[in-house]
Image 1 (tube, rainbow, N blue to C red):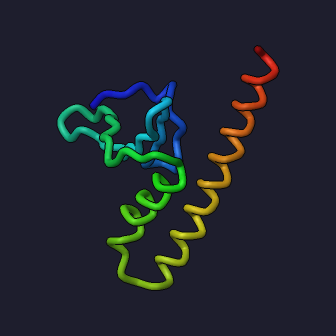
Image 2 (cartoon, rainbow, N blue to C red):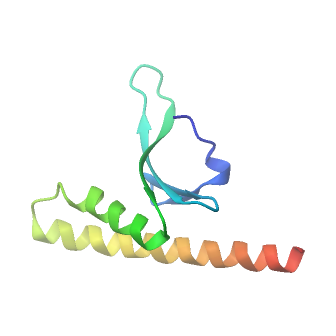
Length: 99
């Protein structure tokens, strides 16, 4: 699915969130082999952002076998979550002050 990155919140390099009044959609970045174009594939639909983050962690950390690598990846993901929540808070403040 070709989604515009403009209306998504990018989480790290490979994931993005997009929400509406009904759900939050989690996307994973994919580069098309023949063209090199980036596409965002939906990998789940959730009722809240916490569920979306849980799925992202399962999807991202699940294939890792080494405990040290898992610990490092979880630290990275925590930073992504912090960045996203700050981004959401900023957008919320801007929206409230504009209207």
